[in-house]
Length: 262
Length: 359
Image 1 (cartoon, rainbow over the protein chains, first blue to last red):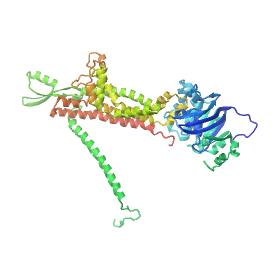
Image 2: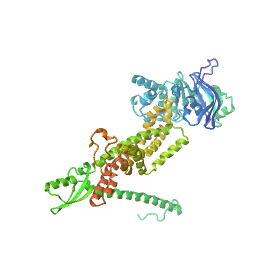
Image 3: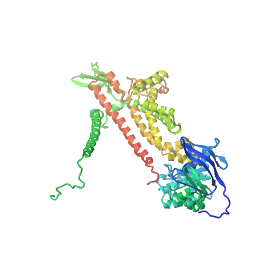
Image 4: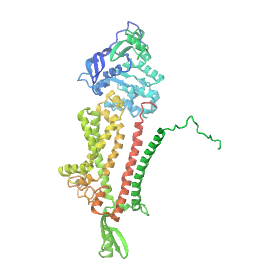
């Protein structure tokens, strides 16, 4: 929960999104979104299904480039002051800085060790000491080290669902991004695994800017510093989590968080 | 025992309506169809085995007629000498004549004596070479079509053309190979021409199968890899291909069966009807592939037109014929089946039981 102290310093901005429109073919998915995501804090995106949360988060590392006919038609997204949709931006470099964890955990069908080393190998890092060190560090950061340290070389698909998701988080941490995008990372996890992931995110925010999509109001409320409420492709409300939940400025937001629709 | 209920329970009793009759009639129909196919297949294989096995299996150690598998085909001489009737292959017949010191009149049957060795070697060489070429071309173009190309009218047209190619009769491929490789590129009737002709013939199978296999790779793998800063090619090489490969290989076994079972294109491009020399029986090694190269020493299946061409069917040739089919099925069919099963069991399953952690 955020500290409601009004005198705290205004946080630095990690991602500046200014008035973006996004289309899938002829369907408008995002309508005039403007949003500043603060650095080293957790920002959660809430809203009913199909409201554009996932589309929005996938714009931030240009994952939507993979989808045929999907395009940003207006507005800019700046990370560290650079427009990431500029022609000169290399998507590979962008994705190294903006990591992503997906809703469905998707470990590769290889060993736990190789899963973590994957991102480093993509960057042609071959030195074993560096990789070993990165594997241990990121597994420790993802609170998975103690559970898997004796079977690093067994297949990652043998892990439980919660472990697989934490492995995916560890894998994303291994390449040391500055921003972590998480698309409903806990949707397939039980409450215990969810609690572990949340604890992990809380510890990570010291070094990372985290954007998390969630369907759980409680999760958004207890975890995030800022919350954005999306509805029908529009950003209805954005602000401090405590304010948004205690005293929503928009009747739609209030209806949604109190469970009257969505 | 006598206390059995006299009446059927009424509550769960089967209703007397036409639906039940239709159900059982449909089931019967399906059963009949399956069994008739099984019986037909069994009849074919049993006939081949029963007629062919007595020639392949011998009563002495090593219990297999090794001559049949290791010798070249020869002309069979059938004659009578001092009241005993003989059936000897050409070389044995000459030795016999020298031994007795006189010329013995005999009835001759071309290609009915000796063995199958050149056909075995020929089949192996053709299959290995053409499958290699087909896999390289096929898998690479399938990767382009399913991973790189932008969907559109042109790509749909290309895909349709590939599917159409699969339906082209093999003799047309034979003529194409004859025109392009044998005459056009002046490669002559050679192993090289045969390799490329057969490779083009199985390409549609390989491309279609590989594309299906690539499509079955979960999108999550691609996204996961790209989100970790992987380039497109590295993603394909490290994640997509390893997952798709078992599928590609199992389906290309279909291609192996088609190459090995082909006749017309081989007759046109790779093998002379009467030519039984072996690859190492050449003057220079460079002749192996070059345009003056030796033609491929025929294959199992091209023995069939050969038999028909050189012989009117007769007792002796038919015997050889059955034997040929029998060893053909043993050497070719069974390994293919086993390779298929092996590939599915050992390569396919561990990957395809991937279940997003629902265990």
